[in-house]
Image (cartoon, rainbow, N blue to C red; front, side, top):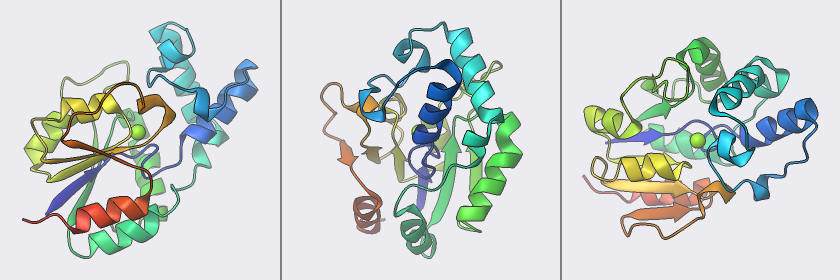
Length: 195
Ligand SMILES: [Mg+2]
């Protein structure tokens, strides 16, 4: 079977790095638990252009480069990769392709058969959503922390796992979507999916 994983805040523990960068660079005082909106522009009350600029500034910083994997992800991926085809679908812009591949190979060597960049949040975004890529790839499950991506994939993917985060706790989840809190739960759920 084929399973798809989001990268940031599912495999890569990126939000603490972004928050540390943001606080230091823009003199803010943000804590992860207070981030209730996935959109940086809405969360930080800045224009979408500024949000992209600041995110790009972050990508160039050491904070971005020193992100570590989410707890338990390496062990779980290692086990799942023995039986399944695993892919990464990330909305990181494609100019980060090389750095992203290096990071993934460093922490998850040869575990993923494919890495897809949707390019969604870049200046020259693609029209294809994660749901579209999931359908094209025929994935049986998607794990993501962005509720938008999960909802967008609702008709394309049979099993949808939402990695719990402060920014995805608003509102009711469709019955089909399962909220998960850690990699032990993800591995357990995915290993029980039948063909
Ligand atoms: Mg994410």
